[in-house]
Image 1 (cartoon, rainbow, N blue to C red):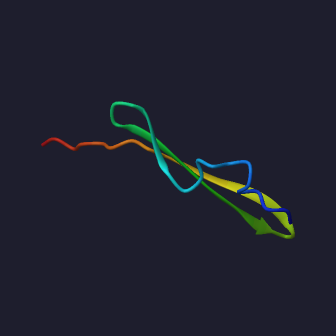
Image 2 (cartoon, helix red, strand yellow):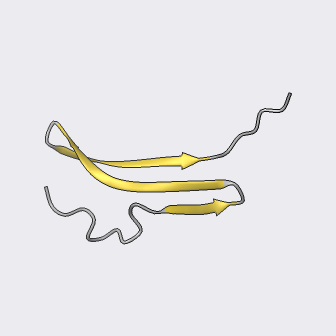
Image 3 (cartoon, rainbow, N blue to C red):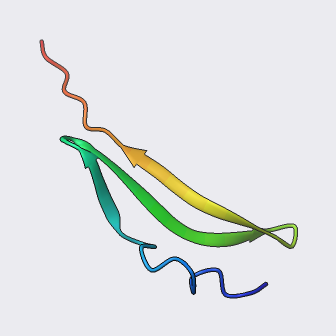
Length: 49
């Protein structure tokens, strides 16, 4: 697998998209020999009672 981090200088950082919305662009992981990128979206929720 080639170094997939070379073209992505923004990896492993939390990026704010809007107020209270962020995304995390993680590294590629190997699954059955194929690279898959990892990403997540973070949106805080509040539970009011």
